[in-house]
Image 1: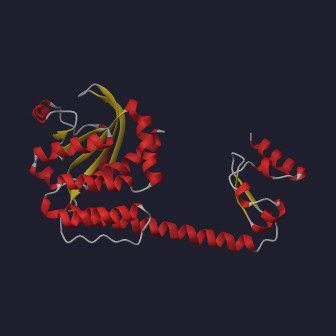
Image 2: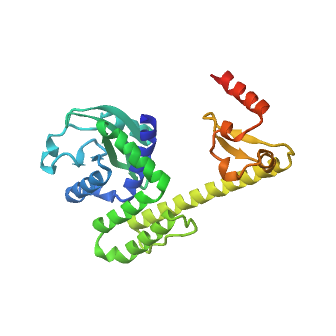
Image 3: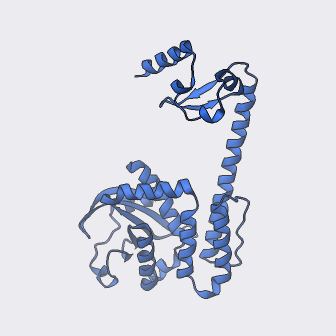
Length: 284
């Protein structure tokens, strides 16, 4: 479970970075950074920390700004050290600062290839099951976090970006609804433009992946159509996930009563059932 959360936290921190004005780290803009970590922390139900490249904590969603001077330098934190080498750093450990067990994911922040600091998300260990469910819901449903980030930008950016923001939110909703041909064009050179480019890249990558799947499925169907024998694919859980036309005719059963059904509820040929049963018995 932790491995899945680790992978999903990488995606979370990458998307969260898109709404961060990274130059605020260089400027040490405490009010902006504190507002950012508190907002993201509330949305993700997690602890958010901004650290400069020397390890000084600039903002933390669990610590008041006036108490940050008392916080120990974070440059030696394992997840921070790992992100210096591998871009991302992941650790499960006890936080001496707030006295709680946490899962940490740190990402190195760059501006024009210059290392400027770190964005770190920390998930409370007792909330891992809840977090996993939220992450799975997002990636299965698609596009929810994109809309959240777009909404967050409405709060963080000034009114002069309203027209561009409206366009980004509109296009983000279209992408989340499955329209992968949509392209976001923002007439600016700020973080909003970077977010639009990131969303365009994401939709293009997903579109390429879906086309690849379609071609692979077409190739598979071409091969199977040339085979004049019934073919059925069964999962280790004994459910039918694929069958060709010949198999459908041989089973003499409606398609909806075959797909995702247990094979022993569909197949009536006792000899074939015996062969399949013996196969699964040998796997145990």
